Length: 302
Image 1 (cartoon, one colour):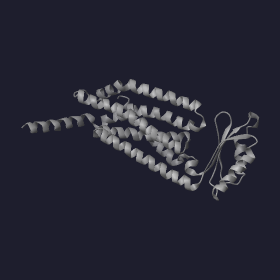
Image 2: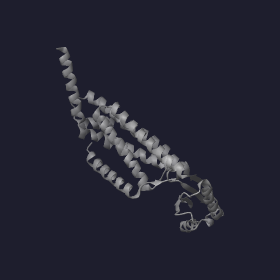
Image 3: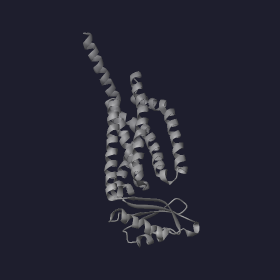
Image 4: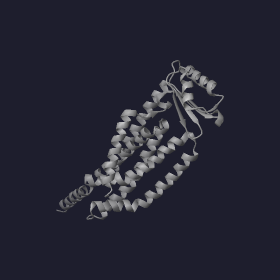
């Protein structure tokens, strides 16, 4: 608990920085949300590999609007994102045909996705509603699962994890798409699991050791669940590292976000959620509850 004097200011500073950077840069929305055409190309050989600037110049010369060109990986793979073209699916098909005609000799096309404006708008709406409802459901569960003070601390920790996960997207510029929504919801579930385990032990110790100082009791609750936390986190991390290295481009971004999320949730459960109980006075609340229950018993006896 003594580390709360470091963890609280650090998390507060990071959270404020995330909000500022988010307002300045926003998320790197993928084709799912922005609409348009995304193409990922792999050079057929090292000799045919083109500089990113050359690919960008050729793509912009098509006349389809401002094109985003990025290089990823170590083997010269390139992603090209074209904006939505007026004219429906036929117009998007023209973009794909033009790109294949120009780059087809030097590159092989690993992935091609086209999303229209109507579909992207529906995905934005559905994804936003899904995240909001899921978070509300989780917060409601925490409120009814624990006493008021424990619930407030658990909610603070969960919101902290969501903010830092969004910050990971903002800082790394990972593409934010429907897979990212799944990653956020999975991290929320993992955060809930970590918090519930620690707080179940905290509640048990509050009833068992009625005179133990709050700081000492919280340290005890964390230490008695530390082995479980370490085993769960390490097995999850090993699985995610394998997905990052061998899972391929399709799930690499999801695995990286989840890997960061595991570190965030573990840190939060130990150094954010539990220390919050000190500031909101969980021990004094417990004593008030016991005094009220004792008074009711004495009144009934009379």
